[in-house]
Image 1 (cartoon, helix red, strand yellow):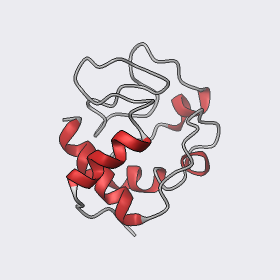
Image 2: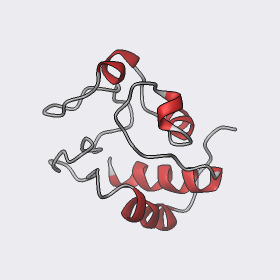
Image 3: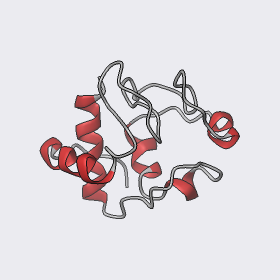
Image 4: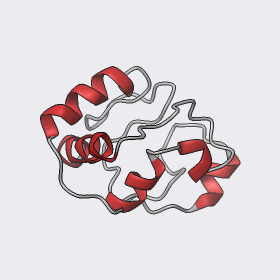
Length: 108
């Protein structure tokens, strides 16, 4: 099942409760436990300056977009074995669609 536009407001809530402890979205935002996500869409995995990635993440060469994020966010460790992202994932497609819709707006 591919990505389809969701509810950005619900995605913002998901980000705050599930992602914000490790990630920022604003331009120039700090890298935390995870990298800053500004400019995420169209970026290759493992390439944020100043963030220390695992070799698996650097070598994966994933080009982040709607569908790659949709698949990744279901189960990050399965999608990208060796990632240090501890997040278990969002199993519900609607939640992933909402989060990605929010990220498309907030990281541009």
